[in-house]
Image (tube, rainbow, N blue to C red; front, side):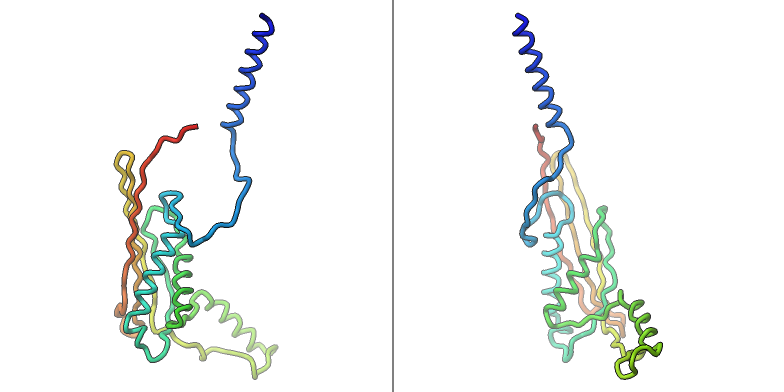
Amino acid sequence: MMTTKFSTKALILFLSSVALMSCGPKAFVKGQYDDPTKENLLNDQWSETDMQQSVKDLVASMVQHPSIREADKKPIVMVTQLQNKTSEHIDTQSVMDMVRVELTNSGRIAFVDKEAREDVAKEYDYQNSGVVSKETSKGPGGQIGADYILNGRLDSIVQEVGKDKSIYYKLTLNLTNLKTNLITWTNQKQIRKVYRKKTIGL
């Protein structure tokens, strides 16, 4: 009788320990490299797949516009900002960086670096301080001015009814002529993703 009670208590303690272990904090302990271009629908937020698809389609549209395709020389573009009008925290700089890289790789467009202006000004001061030879020193007056400004906006609409959720994204890019302030090219990429809630068991 005592043995049966002891066995029952031991079993209860064992099961309780297992339950506590399964409910405790978990950590990712093993990883592996994955293909960054593979479709990612892991959650209902803006993902690298959304960014890749949007940038690819918009860049393809831009380089086929007559102002780019038929230009006698490479248009000089300055990237400014992408407004984030979604409810998510999205690295919009990363989106515009990808746009710039894809356009540069197309061989159709050249860019001036707005972000490097402060560093360039400091380097001018250094090179003209007397420590750099006159033959190799650079200074103000030699930079190339941009022909266009590239900016845009990212919007989203989230709808949730019962167990169903829909997320709609719209990425719009604008190429504005600096001389005339007219929008030379504009286009948008739309993405809609749908999800359904499921009960997650143990």
